[in-house]
Length: 167
Image (tube, rainbow, N blue to C red; front, side, top):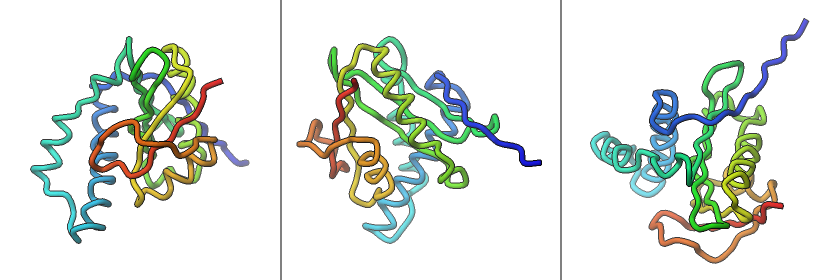
């Protein structure tokens, strides 16, 4: 007999221990990828702590945002957040699935749940940014119907900007 493990995606306070652990895992991975690619080293631990503290995620809290946590078999496995940029535009942030859980459908599930959260906040359009080295993310967004657009922010690490109408 085969037991099927399932995903659940639910809102989570941005400052919960689960959210903090997922933020740390996300930021460590994307920061290390950048530094390894550009400088041949991992992120300096002090810099990592400063950046995590500088971006706690309060913008991903109601009433203008929402953080979502995906659990696989009940265990925290990933996250995605949305925040309103204006009355009709939401930004997708912090899409992350632990490496061991990738390939099991969590990332598209998180992105779609984030779109639902954005709609609930009144958004009719979702935007996001990412980097060139995050090829998996760019492929995911293209599969989900996001189209590359002109920049919507001046984030120094952003290299690609995407948008999608929320029907």
